[in-house]
Image (cartoon, rainbow, N blue to C red; front, side, top):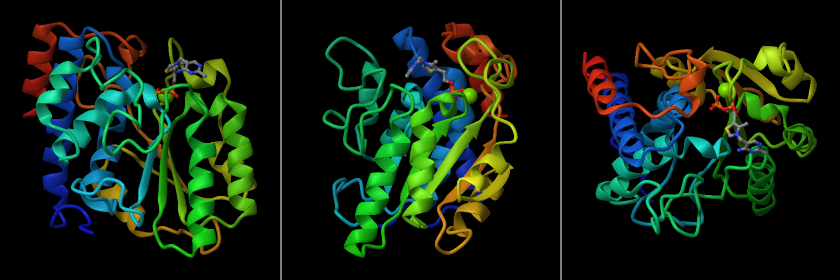
Length: 277
Ligand SMILES: Cc1ncc(C[n+]2csc(CCOP(=O)(O)OP(=O)(O)O)c2C)c(N)n1
Ligand SMILES: [Mg+2]
C-alpha cells in the first residue's frame, strides 16, 4: 500500500493547506451552506494527516491495513471533502455538488457515499466511541495500523467522549490518537462561556491519556507531534491543537458568526487573495 505522497516538505504542506482552504470556501459559497469557520481551523491538521501522516491509498480506500481517520466534527465536511478530492479519493469536480440535492457530498459525511470516509459523523460525540472500537479491533488483531480522530472542543461537552476516553486508557490503546481542534468557539458562543473545558490537559491526563498541547495551525508542530506518537508507550495520545476558527482569512478569524455563515463571492475573492499572499 502506498503511504501518502512522496514526503512533502513543510512548505509544500502549507501551500496545500492554503489551496484546500480556498477551494473549501469556494465550495461553501457555491452551495450556500457550510461551516467555514470549523473547516478552516482544522485545515492544517487535516492536510498534515492526509498528505504526510496517514497510511492510506486512494486506489484502495478500504485496504484492511490502512490507518483510519475519523472526523468526529462532521459538520466540517467541507475540509474533509476538499482534502479527499485533492488526495485523489473523489473527483475534484464533485466538490461543485457539495450539498446539492442528490449529491453524495452531504453536509454530514456518509461512509456509504464517499470513498475515504471511515464513519458517518455529524451528530457530535460519536467519533470517539467509534475510534476506540477501531483501535481495540486493531489491537486484538495484532495489526499495526493506527486510528486518528478529530473532535471539536465544544463537542467535548458530549458525555460520550468521556466514556470513550476512559475505555481507551483502560484498554491501553496506544494506537489511538485524538486531536482536539481547540479553537475555543462552538456554535454561537465561546466554549469557556458555555461549559468550560479548561484545564483540558489535566482532565485528559487524569483519564489516562498522554497529552501534548501544540499550535494546531503550525504544520511544523503538527509534523513533530505526529512523529512522536505514541507519546507514552501503552497510553493513548491526545493532541490539544490550539487553533483559530476561520484561520487564514482575516475577517473570519476567531469570529463566532463564521461557524456557519456563507461568504459572498467578493469575500471569497478577498480570502483567495489573502491565502495566496
Ligand atoms: C449532538 C449534536 N448537537 C448539536 C449539533 C449542532 N452543532 C453542529 S456544530 C456545533 C458546534 C460544535 O462546536 P465545536 O465542536 O467546537 O466545533 P468547531 O468549533 O470546530 O466548529 C453544534 C452545536 C450537532 N451537530 N450534534
Ligand atoms: Mg470549537
